[in-house]
Length: 497
Image (cartoon, rainbow, N blue to C red; front, side):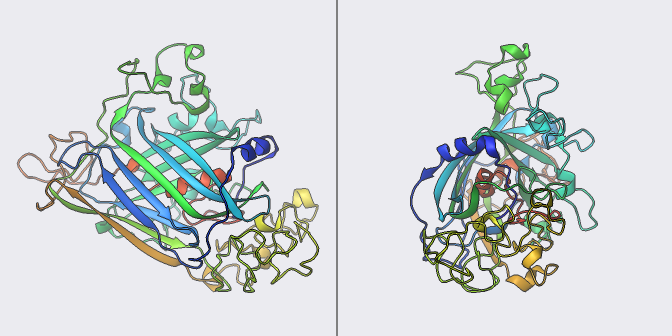
């Protein structure tokens, strides 16, 4: 997948050591986009605080996602982020992504795990994402106050305000944010879940009808940040199948890393990922466990809705632009299959390879391998590295995953293939499922925001939110180092999606 990569020299060997080679992906469903969604409740009784698990999959051979936003039913009872201790454990996520490494076909799978913590939503107290102090660690991943929590949890990463904006380009502020940091081959990877009020504008391709509920958004690394430039890396493609399992807690768990002890007495994991769960019934001071995170609604049925779009395909050959090295000429082979249509192989399909008998892994000599280049035949590398000031480092102004350097319509994404849109709903039954439904009572969830019925049947008004119910399929993308906001920059460069 050609987009922002943060994998640099020091982490390369470690990254490759983590990869498990599982074989070539099946191409039988090439050109389709059929996301699969399932939600399992641990306890479906009305007004209880239940753990639940969300499974989201993209089948093998489907085009990968360009967009994915989930909507939480507005009647769900939710405690806002400012009512939950910072650092409280609110969920966990496991994902698997199918990758292409170092110009080869997608035939590798890398597992990634996150423990999610409640994090600050205060946009006035921010932390820089990048390593501005040049000490080898991103600023968000440092713990400058030695609290046991990295600054990206206690402060609000500044790039969010540049990535998530409304129709007037004003920054959006989430009702709730959870975050997790995983170490992938020695590299800090930041995953964040953000949820907004019903009706919030997220993207022009995503409906913002209040009746859909609360739009939930996933951010990986600082993808979509207009102030960030891509870096070439060893992971050059991201394919299906894509699997994710997101377990969300109804009641928070304690975090040993926040214990009120000297920082040198904390578990070394606290410095790396800011979370350690206590053993057995052990409690620490402060104890973030036992805090209500949400409450099931009243007896009835409720639809969780995921609205997604598959990536564009300019030449309509069933291979999305981000995976297609011959974006405007139908491929002779399938890049998901090792060596198919690429005899040398050098990552460039024979349909546009000037000489398929000669291996040239970087056809345009711009520092990006063919399968990691959004214009493999037109130089558009980093001008500081190539010495060519006319090159724009993979800029993609219209976010169609084709670089400006080779895009004849660089300001019109629709000209290079339409988005394959899909809406998936999963109905959850609460109680017997025969009731009229409605939000939980104030007694059942005293700290829930808005839309809470009082004991006398009244309506408290306002809005509610739940971040941890996000379908976190996009979390698998973090293994690419750059990740992807839901309308992916694909192969990097340019302004926020």
